[in-house]
Image (cartoon, rainbow, N blue to C red; front, side, top):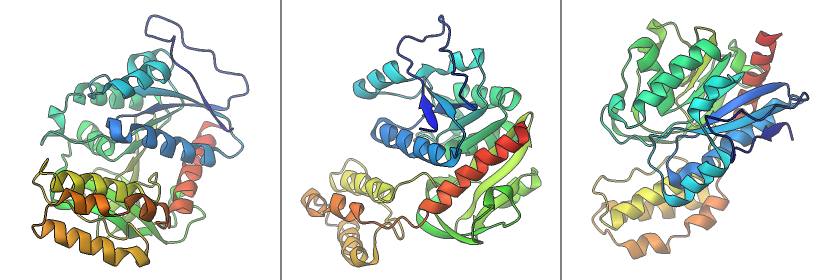
Length: 325
């Protein structure tokens, strides 16, 4: 394996970190801020792409979790076994840092319970880490921390697989076509003109959903902001929709679910769209939702962005390697 995971069960702030093998080329810190329901899948998705993108390089990965993110018993036990407190990262800065998004709860990002820890981590990373890959909410957090740019709430959730335009001259786009597809799933955005004014270079964008990937040098770190979700697997969007429409049908929430565009194959779209229209049309029947074969349909959903995601990560790691020579 090109990615080696460090176990963390016996490692706490008052103990020394495990030694990294001489065979390791780079070290990477992976900070998983996703809620419990997506915690394991998020780890797998990001680390699979990192492994594929590493090529012949060997990357040692240590996993971290912010203490301010609420956890249930099962994920708390996983974190205690496999993850480290973020404070231990300060003792041994990694070469690369990946910070996932998180489930936004508060209207103001600064009111999230983990905000201080996240903003401190990003600031520290800009001073000690050579490259940071920041996803979704963490990308928006970086724009607030480094540039004073706040996110804007969308009128409705942006969710689906969208055509994107890639800047062929951007290093992250090496080996890719100028037209690609990427998933998006978010309730907020930051306008593209704000990024350009702050000096970011847009690597991937579209008129429909705005920017997806942008980069800028901040302190010692090359920062990659990702507003899209290249790490998603084929059924991620459908699983999110299943969660939202189930909660709506069960009257656990009154916000209308949004059906993600192109989240299933063409042969399954009409039936899924019909279910959606019936449920939001007033028939909030949990049995209707339970009867739909979400798992079977998700298993055959297309993965049009898989090669794009692998190349983006390979270009990121390769670009970091060249900067480090």
